[in-house]
Length: 340
Image 1: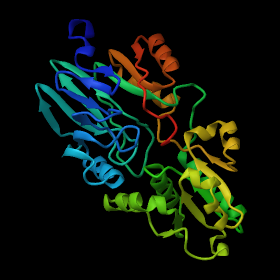
Image 2: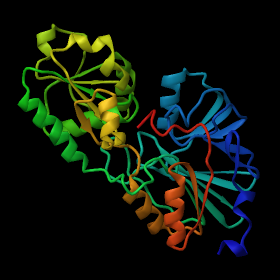
Image 3: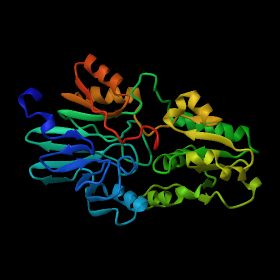
């Protein structure tokens, strides 16, 4: 029981820069430059440049180098899944979070207390990264991006099937799929391959470097071609993957009567789809939905649940009703939408 142990705040406590470990003198996913940082994954709201030293999985370090340049930190240390390091008596290890390539939960142990910082995570299968691994702990620190009962995401295969049905229904039109550059784009491509789409997939130039990085780490994306090759009619019946911002950009006019699609958990809210001019909303999320969040907490049964960002109040209330002490940290700097 936590009551018989040291207070969790003695190990990890919220600071303006992020979660701080005083005994080990490091931050986890700090939002501004610090001397020592442990980074859970490569999305820009969690992985920033300018830290003195960074510990992360090899894949996350590669992503940060690709995005920020090789000198993104003073020094780096790769920590593979399951490996452990100890600093001033504090043990740190990384286990899969199932969010994107290289994403990890930070497991922090000190004087018999175990705290798990999940970063961003999901529980459903993702062909581009290892699945989330639950870790027994005294304190589980969770996101709550989709922490409301209304958010129950459909099966990924169902959404990809909707996309392919639309392609078959409108063979003279192109399908322009908005998908964030890190994680979502590669996941959509792999899901299309698994669904039997063997034709070339055209990609926006902003995705090419991260696509190559994924392939260098063993994720086969199949035949890809730049979306700038060929004439307008060459793209009839084609699938093009691009950053969401490109959907409304002049760049999209090069395609024949494009069907605007967008892969995001937020596409469950039809008003958001309409606001963005999305004709084919695809509810594919890299974050846990309500059922995944509550099932994870129920499976781990931590002594306490801390919630970093998102819809904190609903998840905290659910935890309290299920006999788990909960608190909302309301950490600033983590974006619920920019990378989903």
